[in-house]
Image (tube, rainbow over all chains, first blue to last red; front, side, top):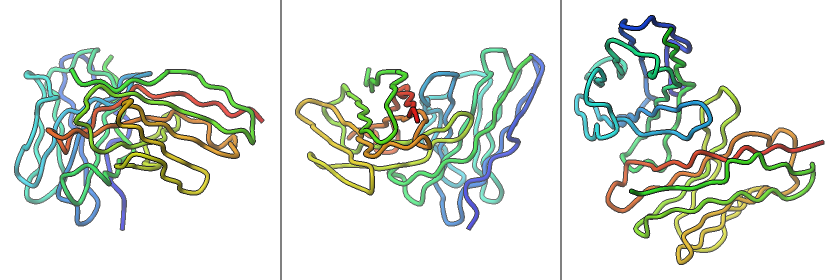
Length: 114
Length: 112
């Protein structure tokens, strides 16, 4: 049973480009969470999704950021027109239930905006 | 605003000693408490979670919860150099049971 898979592990984008981050949850997990971590800081909740539904996106910036978790395929975190302040590690976690009790994390995508 | 506070450290502990990591939280409605370990450049990994007041032991790790004082701690006995990492405290509250509130982490260094 593979763990939570995120790709790419490292992503470099120029200002103004789009970044697409992918997350495949563990088998049997239908709940996905995205977090952002700035250097020397804790994780900040961004969005919580179940299959085809956004449950809570209160942690997502109102503009340029979007997330989806289609019926088939990985969850996608999309950042349009990236700026330097978007540089961070983006972690995806999945769980079999929505209680965050046993959320397993992927290895993260480290986005660098140049 | 709900907050989780941790001393950023670094906390330096000699090998074989007990490392004590502390975390305080602001929301009295908090119900579940988690300790994650994060090595530099890696993802967080769950060490322990605790729901009830008191101690919970798992191997060399003991989580302690005091809801009246709103703190949770993690003790690491017989500290090893491989325990050197950043330890993140996360709290799950009553009104948002799927959204963890995270502390910024305490960097622990175990000196051989």
